[in-house]
Length: 64
Image (cartoon, rainbow, N blue to C red; front, side):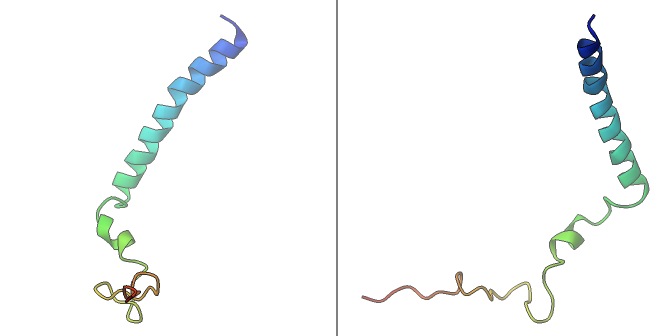
């Protein structure tokens, strides 16, 4: 087998191993406990979750 083939084979085996190691680290350190917290980070008292403050989204339909 050529050196490039060996390198490609090693790379193909290393990527899933590294991905599983990262997933294990995340689970071990509690990174997967509260998935909704990250989704709610952009919202605060000035821009609450239930009120649209975007000018584009709050546009009133054009009256003819």
